[in-house]
Image 1 (tube, rainbow, N blue to C red):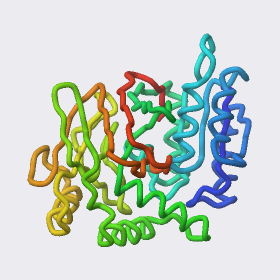
Image 2 (image 1 turned 60 degrees about the vertical axis):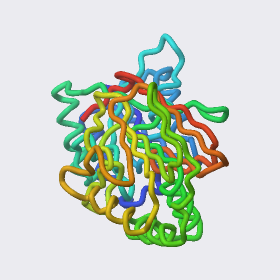
Image 3 (image 1 turned 90 degrees about the vertical axis):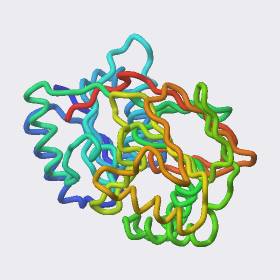
Image 4 (image 1 turned 180 degrees about the horizontal axis):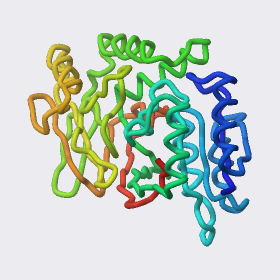
Length: 310
């Protein structure tokens, strides 16, 4: 099997020695070509060209941002070419997507799972989310957020540019700081699905699976019924007192996640389309990557969009 191994050399939780061990294991069972990413969206470019270059499998080592780039690259391959399958080796700080698939968060263990799946011909087809706006047309794997969580992602990216590592502790520090500074208290959002509209929303999240994210080993589940095999789910915060919002967030840590109904929030389940608008530009993120400010984004569930080896 010919495989393209896309490696983010800046991956947060791997070392050069770990990468050598992983590459040795992969090369023992397949014909591997290694390509290191050098700039933003480079992983997407490499993945897009993989089909034309005859690769049967694309693997990546990196975080959720690298995964998002690869997915979008694979799905933008020219029509008529057979799209390679995809396998993910976690190398980021959260690795939400790969852990949601049930693959170990340790990169060496994940490599073993992937090699076993290749030997057995094991794969699964999953749905993806797709966003469209006057500035976007791209896919996301696990979540997209308007407002507070996107503000957190933007601030973490700023901290990283100043030399800090993107650890769970940094995300928690920034989230708490922005929460108490009042960044969550802006009811400018409207969430709309066929037959149901809710305005006065402070923070909105669209998910393609659960969890939304991890706090270390703990999953946060605002939409615990969200699944890769279903349409999109959504969460909307409709009240913003610190006490109530803190209680809602605490419920997300429960094993069963946040109940579908409760004070201060609304949820939607298994939706094919969702539209979120804002009365003024608000921060927006997909898969933990800040995209900038947006005033309207349309969300679509794309059935069986991606073949994953896991």
